[in-house]
Length: 358
Image (cartoon, rainbow, N blue to C red; front, side, top):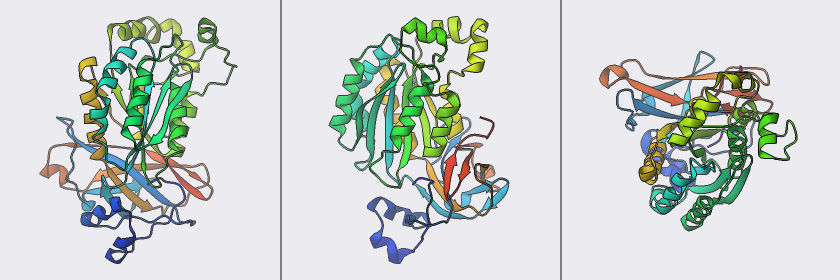
């Protein structure tokens, strides 16, 4: 389910026969799945994951009464609650830098097994990026097509800079082309978290005919994630080359002024702002880690409420999820990962994940 203009219609058990197959299971979780109609009603959806603080293990046993949602400090009435009910629209985004490509080759070998952890109705698109992004496979439920695209990606080479923000922006834009209404949009990103920034020096070094200002910024990419209701998860692979690049460029104070003017992007920031997760993965274990990451996505909860706080167009509405009093006393200390809010738009509710300062 997305957070564009919606009308939340709960028809109870009598409407179960008209629900999508994947929504019927939600009836066992105290609620019926929402139907989408064109309406002025503003419905906000929140995709959230609850983890044990000590172990990082997902908590998949919560019920509707275990979570409270607040918008701009005002508690909202939940109208929908489910777990692993809505299908996934996953954009696999691969970094083509030299330090990541060997891991991509390993991933290609085990990609089919990893993708089997998706449900049959889940769809996958495959993209790669360096200085620009390229779509290798649009959304499909055919796993063989997705695996073939991953194998093509593993054979590609690039000597260009890796512009994180452009890759994330284009992947988020691709997520809007989903073929499944009401799906949860997720970017699964394989990277070493060593980006470049779109400065004139970088453009000249790589000989790219990129017009000044044509690359999307971190702010552009983050806003696109907000407006498309897309979360970012990542497989983080680090190598000696990654550490060297970080020390010589990204952590070098000489580059600080350029980084300040053109934030290069950071995998942890993108994940934190959208409520996603970063999982470290070495070359030998990358396929298994992808399967684990898909499994973790499956444990996420989907909540919805009708916004009852009037705000002007463009206002950033903060969202805060809390555990109900006493829950943390019954279990280990828990951590909630979720988007942090949304920007209000005329005639539509766009869920978001970042404060308005971005």
